[in-house]
Amino acid sequence: MNKIDLTTNGVLIKKASGEEQLFSPEKLEQSLQNAGVDKETISTIVSDITNWIYPGVTTKKIYSRAFSMLKQEKTASTVRYKLKQAILAMGSTGYPFEILVGELFNRMGYDTQVGVVVDGNCITHEMDVIATREKIQHLVECKFHKDQGKVVSVQVPLYVRSRVDDIVLRRKSMLKYHDFSFKAWVVTNTRFSSDSLQYSHCSGISLLAWDYPTGDGLKENLEKYNIYPITVLENLTSIEKDYLLEKGIVTCLQLLNKLESRHNLQLNKQKKGALLEELKSICKK
Image (cartoon, rainbow, N blue to C red; front, top):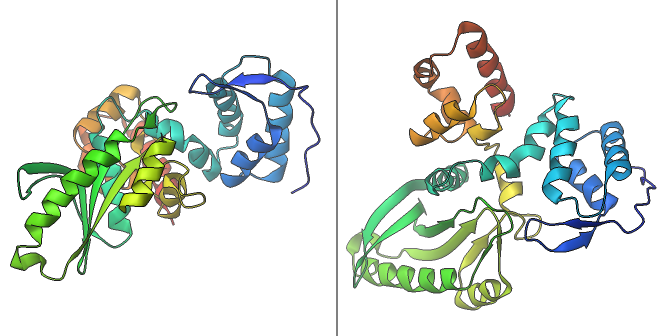
């Protein structure tokens, strides 16, 4: 697309972590482009925000302004651009995120279990997700944060390595897992510290964060497999979303497939119809 020639005179903005950085129209342009927004809309949004921006404004406010403009377009790109905030809005517990990650592995062709208590050689452990295909089993720890400025410290892969090793030692003595290979994972909706990256690479732990690995992070995989949490929906209130999350209905496809859940919400005919159309639009391939 054509380069948008805008100057911001070095305006400093504040990231979720509290750090300051120079506002980059190019980064905003790229994020909109990644969401599939058309060229004309990108130009309009970037121009508006560049003219509006002021020193000290948070990236959250910038996102909110961009999304409110994008929302008026009523396109699929609106949902993609809202994805990060929708995941942050999935409640105070990590269980809905575990279900989301389990669904991701399921779409990748694995048989998945969520929140499983398994025996180790020394003690029992609860694994957030276990994903199995043929004779490969992935043992996954999920770390969910409501604050996108949070990072996963090195302590997490350290204890994951020891827990998985204990489970693997037990399973290798079981006939059921003869010739199986096992893989430890840590998945987060935010990012990893440099120490956690270094240790995980050294110890053989696979990592998945919002934008890690580059080009193949959580964001890209959720979009690739068309997995969106119900918190992206415009036709449900926060109370209705919380109700569904408590029932373990986390993704839009889950809600679409469970028609009785919509009836339990006691929606009127008009709202049910609007919700159904929104779900079909999001879930279609």
